[in-house]
Amino acid sequence: MQKINLKKNINLSNFTTIKVGGFAEYFSQPNNIDELVNLIKWSKSNKQECRIIGAGSNLLINNIFLEGLTICTKNMRSIEIESLTGIVESEAGVMLPTMSNMLAKKGLQGGEWAVGIPGTVGGAIYMNAGSGDLTLANNLISVQVMNTKTLEIAEIEKKDINFQYRFSTFQQNHLLIISAKLLFKPKGNIKQLLETTKKNLKRKTETQPYDLPSFGSVFKNPTNTYAGKLIEELGLKGFKIGGAEISTLHANFIVNNSSANSQDILELITVIQQKVLQKKGISLQPEVRMMGFDYP
Image (cartoon, rainbow, N blue to C red; front, side, top):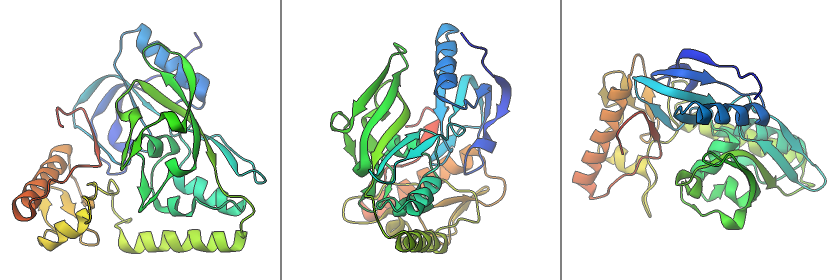
């Protein structure tokens, strides 16, 4: 096995968009697929628990010491775009805004919506992230995965993956997303695509709290309504617990306005759920993944 680059006792708050997290016993940022595979093999042969994070958006990590290995895939940023065919091959760590801008510059249509989403390609497939009806799953051809139990690498076609609203089968199996093959519509008007992408980003930054650390959206939208609308109707904008606050700009965002810790944020999520259930009779489900908690 090749030499692997491990760091010890790393503060994970620096690797989440809400700037909250505990300490990882072992931590590594692989630069390519081979390094990632070697890390998974190391964790298995040393009987270490292994967790994977991407851009750290949509992720609440408990303020505790996390035993085992935490892998951040953000350095796995290789991407190949074929302008004529519209085929894109992307490693898991490529940021969605980066890909969105690259697609527009190459005249490929269909990725303009992704410019304001602070996640990675791997994370977006895992979460089936999107904006409105638009998700990366719409453009997916196949996913290269590694089975973390058997260490086998395989290619899975889109038809063999169950995608639902903010859900994919990767949330329930032992398959680690390594890379993805996607298809976008070629031969688009580059100037128009760049303009649309720019407008989409402007709209996001004007309606969402980009100036403060946050997850992105906290809750999934219930059927026929919006989580942000329900929370706002209860007058909860600006409501705080410790350093965690419901954004005054968009009620489905929790911001870290100073020194929030994981308990502040978890408590605020729970209070929102309780109040919406009491007043509206609707059970809000978090979009945010919890790491190092017994919840949910």
